Length: 290
Ligand code: ADP
Ligand code: MG
Image 1 (cartoon, rainbow, N blue to C red):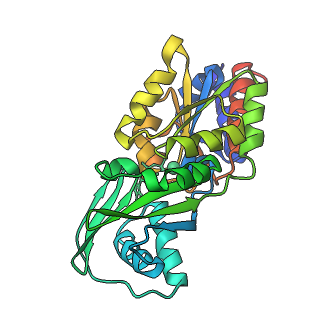
Image 2: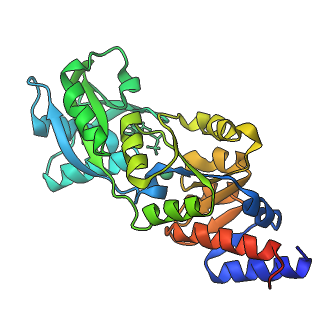
């Protein structure tokens, strides 16, 4: 493309709410063969709500909710926000938290009034026996909901289930990408069954789930097999390394500063249709049609 065409193209894109931070990204995007998406906050709204609390017989609903909300008040994860909101709605009084620790991609642990409370993925408390919860959890995960587990004083006390909403445009965007001959993928830290259920609802081709934040880069490299050029769309701090690794990193609006800094393209607002606009502009620019 001529310098003039690139200038017009980036200007045209900006009018559509698509900011190309580097001119090369226009060409890279035109040549992309795979478009991979983060799940939470990118394909979904990222504002989950608590839908189910499945209890072990030795624990009560309000007791568990108050304990986990106290711990999660220290976390900024969307699951934490959902749990704290549920405790607030129930008008629960939260205890005193000490020894808080957060493990990226697995969960949180702290003492609440002296009791040891852990909340997170199964891998956050691997030594516990989950068989009693397995059936309920599998059913809910197959509906696309996210289960996390609660251990109190090292005993499995509950499963907390949150549900996030798929963004209104996600499904149509995936279909449009397929119509353009592109392959689609999802990379998520979430539970495998949950991620697979959401991917199936959206018609996404490939899923990599239970990916730790540090491993998202490896997930991008895996998608690049056969020399495919990979675009990655993400919003979170977690996504910054993957955005930098991808051939084209696309940060979706209202994303975190770290995501925006690492991206080649920034979409204003959370609407994924801007991904299609970005592709359309890159194709038009490289054909010098302006
Ligand atoms: P994603 O944003 O793709 O869900 P994360 O890496 O942020 O990925 O989280 C992966 C998983 O780790 C979550 O699905 C959840 O099981 C667990 N997790 C992380 N942080 C928390 C938290 N504060 N409370 C409960 N679970 C958490
Ligand atoms: Mg996200």
